[in-house]
Amino acid sequence: MTLPKTQFSDTAMVLAAGLGTRMRHLTQDRPKALIEVCETPLIDGVLDRLAAAGVSKAVVNVHHHAAPLREHLEARQQPQISISDETDQLLDTGGGVARALDQLGEKPFVVVNGDVLWLDGREGTLTRLAERWIDDDMDALLLMCFTVNAIGYEGMGDFMMSDDGRLVRREEQCVSPFVFTGIQVLHPRLFENAPNGVFSLNRLYDQAEANGKLFGLIHEGAWMHVGTPEGVTAAEDVLNGL
Image (tube, rainbow, N blue to C red):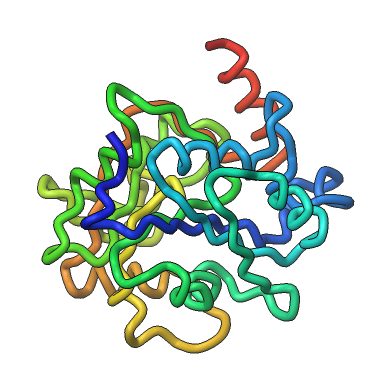
């Protein structure tokens, strides 16, 4: 089952403009999106999953070492690639999506961080997000992973989740059992009062939370945050063990 095009945009966004400083020497001559895990660049792992879910076009933002990433993406056939150029200024996650809104359409759309990998459970992950989406109730639906199952993640979690799936951000010094995976569905209306320029999507999550329209869905399969050299090794250990 793929994303139903009557309800969702057939265009997704991949956030790939980050500096990748935590990757240390691995990003000295390339963007983080081109770091390989099991001989496959991270960006291709994400784009392959989007294509399999029926996404026909992906907007990819670029900044750090933009030229080699552009060149690499030109060779892809599916999904069709559109570049959102941030070489003039890195806009952070929210600003990056806001710049690309004209290309993403008027329907809810998928946004995926370019440094994550995931394995599906019994059903396709993006399909599960689509099935969970309730347009009148939600401005944002975030895929969440139990922190104990999150590969390459060390932290205190991000949100608390109620029985109906509503999310509230964890209080400082508290521990949450859930980490946000960087995989999500957003509605364009979430950006109606967004600031110009540089801002984080966290600002809009807080807005959605205040309006009771921030929801989560628990991921059923493995999830890997590939943000450090150690994260690359951990992800390869998982994938090589399949």
